[in-house]
Amino acid sequence: MTLCISDVISHFARQLQPIVGSAAPEWQQAMHGPVRWTTYTNLIDPAPYLREGELVFTTGPIPDATDDDSGESAAADGIRRSATLQGAQAREYVRRLREVGAVGIVVGPVHPDGGDTSSGEHDQARRLFEGQWHDLIDACAAQGMPLLWGRNTVFIEFARELGALIRADEHRTDAWLTDAQQRITDAALTDGGPAAVVEQLAEELGSWVVCFDDMARARYRSARADDLTGAQLEALQSAAARVLGSGLRGAMRLDVSDVQGELQTLGPSHGLVGVVAVGTVDWADADRRDAGRHLLSRARALLSLSLVRTQEVRRAESGLSAAVLRLLLSGAVEAAHHTAASFSPLPDSPVVVVAGCSNTMSVDQVASLLGRAHRGTRSLTTVHEGTVLLVVASHDLNVDGDTHEDLRLGVSQPVLYDSMSGGLDQAMDALRRALAGDQPTVRYEPAVLDDVLTAVQRVPGMEDLARSLLQPLIDVDRGRSDALLETLRVWLETGGQWEAASARLQVHRHTLRARIEKCARVLDVDLRDPKVRHELWLVLQALA
Image 1: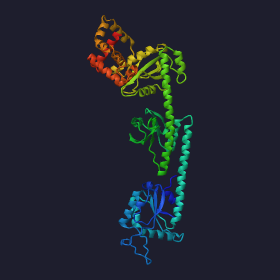
Image 2 (image 1 turned 90 degrees about the vertical axis):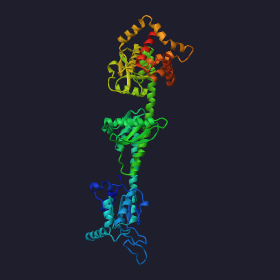
Image 3 (image 1 turned 135 degrees about the vertical axis):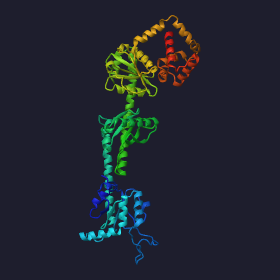
């Protein structure tokens, strides 16, 4: 527990009596102020020499020899005696102590006055004390400063015993920190791993804890976080994304959507792996607050190690998923099933292929959205030529919900694994139509598209017309290595997606942009116009 004024009064009940301060609600905070040390002083203004949390013991200030307002005169031996604080001086004395964080005032003699007294003598002594110090009592009552009367208190003994109590309290804090760190470490070694660390940290701190990965996804959260609303969790996720987006290691105070807490990054500054969010903890004193921060540092280290391992596993699974897709596209279905079985079995056929992309999200974020929509189902998610692909059983497909306003999806017809290459072509074709139209999700419709392409290709002279329209680009391509015609075809087939097209062409996005701008100049067209894009794509199909 934390040693406070109430504890001091209880422990020294025979020596100290509260004059100002009580158990009333309005005194709750003042009477529970943490006591860090005690100081004896007879200075009129001891504030410059005090620190926060000190209990001030005084017998009254000793005025200067030139001070005629003290109400005291020099004794025959020439020694100046302590004086009571009066009027404005008492009010200023209390105000200054409050400013520096003193937790209370004890007024009493340095030496005892002869031991225990009868009840009547005690009451008389208290009335005399209250009469002499009434201005200080009024000032403490007005400013919320606890005031104690130490009639039979030997200061040296009092300070020694109080110091022992404070050290014992510090030892309890150290013991709590040691035990809590051990419990956090033990949690990390259980099957729960990082989830257990988050839960144990929340239990030790008495607050909610949410851990986000490097993509600002809430990977783990404590049971206390279940009380957070959807809006509050979204606010936390947005804040985590901002911290991760800065790329800088550090912490950020959080106070949005009625959520107060702190965000701290995980991992080194050259490669952040996540963020841990902790609700505000109302520590009773600075020692326990420091201990809590040490505990949070231990938990951050354990979570960082866990998330680094998660990243490595995710990269390994991504490589395996890409290998499985290549096997399926090459027709090696049995080998693909055997490879996938080591980390995630393939879904039952027939399957659908979903191609997804976005102008504002990375491929990792798109893959995360599709993965969350199909959590609990067997699926294969990978990136192929800059486009995210999801392979899932046709009866498990879930792309009709509101995933993201900027996400565009193309969905193939149900296909068998032997026809995976055709399913990929269907998904990419549907994605192009989704990018060109208003619908975020387009399902492949083979009948209409095949009829249109067949009709275009059967028009007499269509190939000659297509060649004449594209001849300026063909002429520019002769003797050059940048292949503008092929660049335009791939760019149109990927729906104008720079990242997907640059991945397929294996060129930088800036190079791709320069080539497309050159195509527009050579053909004298506006490639921002969807109608122009459709016409050029049909012309390219006819030429093919």
